[in-house]
Image (cartoon, rainbow, N blue to C red; front, side, top):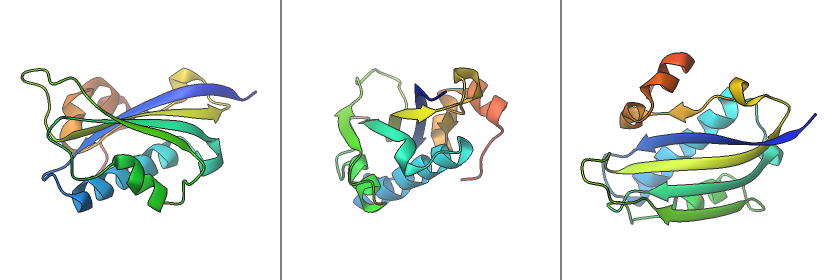
Length: 128
């Protein structure tokens, strides 16, 4: 039975450039889809948030270039908490799936592995 579920993930970039933001966002979304056996039709909506030091491009624009032209997306800023991870792109993806919540894989790449080391350890570290 298909259920609506949410999948989290995050990644980082070295520089605030369109190319870095597009590459990192594309890698993150592709990895979430691959690890969770998703197709574009399974994705209902995607909310992206970025840290305040990223403003060179919208992460959603990278996903539009992947062909997601009918998927609802939103980009927003994260709270600027002292000591928090910088140059970070986070994602909250709503999907339709047969998988249970405990079967879904949340994906954290690059420096973002520091955000959820427990999940990274469960999934196994992915190559950057």
